[in-house]
Length: 199
Image (cartoon, rainbow, N blue to C red; front, side, top):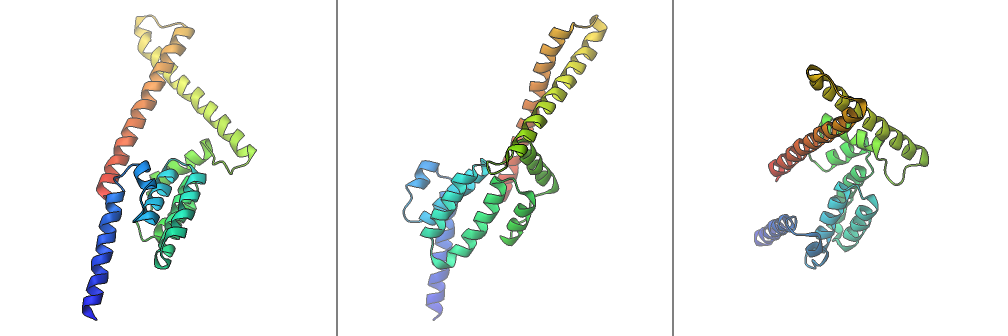
């Protein structure tokens, strides 16, 4: 009896190592994977969810669950719940699903960011009113950013006699774009560091 248990443990460890190796592969390589098909499809589903593509994520997870062994299906369903909550920008459901997976839930800042993304870019399943609200919020955000950029440019140019409205708006636009690019770069670096720490 002990040798059989040891064999099962060795097989499980081999499977885990193989799945970790799969995470380094490209989408095309994962699509053509045959030995660990359910794991490859689950990784593709998680990647689609990170791109907020709920339809593709749902399709990949359905295929993964169909290809999985019966004892793996419960865990895959939990992974699917968490990934689809992310893809649909459902912050509350995401927190519960991640906790059911036995992982650390997203931080308050990450939850706030997901809620803001859900307001600005609602999922495809959202109604027309949610989409219109998102467009209006994006327009308001652009106007606020332009106003901030214009204010900054005018403040800097005051000692030199100031600027006209048209050149001020143009320079303000460049300043706003630069600020957004810097914030996006910092956010991407933090996300990559967090992923590296989890790996």
